[in-house]
Image (tube, rainbow, N blue to C red; front, top):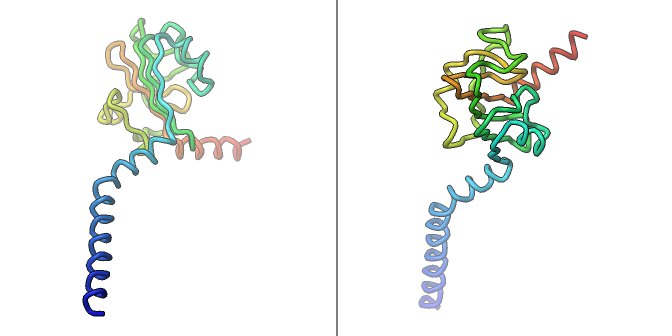
Length: 159
């Protein structure tokens, strides 16, 4: 009996170790998959193509913007956007400097290689609920979903 019990114990221990090793090896990939499945990313040649394809792309994005990249959360209002603006100035309706809304960091739920996280410390204005930075003719815009929801609640209460 001692021999069989020992083999069973050894088998259970070995299986446990194999599961632990698999969890360490596969765990990060599963986490990336889980986080990424609630995100949609797109690239467009123009602002008009982006707005025609996806209703959540902001209306303030100029039609003649080029090299548009867009990442959104499907479970909230977190957004990242980059575009090249031929005029090299903020789009119509955007405001340079502070408008009282405050600068919000880029959403921690979204990461993209084409969106430098350090750019959010250099906000130069606001377009709708987006914070924006304009560097030359390159626009970087981000929207924090929690900040958007708080702003919308405040707007409803002030009516």
